[in-house]
Image (cartoon, rainbow, N blue to C red; front, side):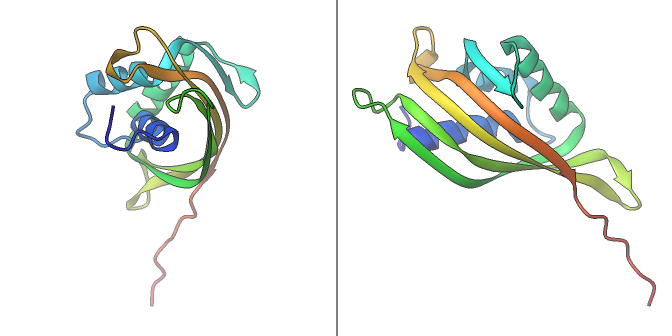
Length: 155
């Protein structure tokens, strides 16, 4: 297990890996980190609709392909550990993903802010690798808003 193996830090690290993107990120690492984070049998809900594991993985991968960079900023996060197992339990909170698109507006990249409210249930699972746990339920409420365009004004 990692040095700080609290539920909150574990979930934050995995969701950050899933949502952040930099040009030097390898696709193989993205797939591996996704598989270590989420159970293939996970119940996934996005904006109230059930989403199959493969579709959710594909959507996140495609979203990364459309941007130059994506950065996660964590807001509020709470955890409710399982009474019998401190490596399992519930984690909920909010984060904002700021994406810089490959499309440009005037001289700069188009920027979008995606606010995500999440609820994740973490459980120990066979075949979950060295960590021994994965997210088995994930509910997301997500909304995206374009960042304001700042156009330089002539003096």
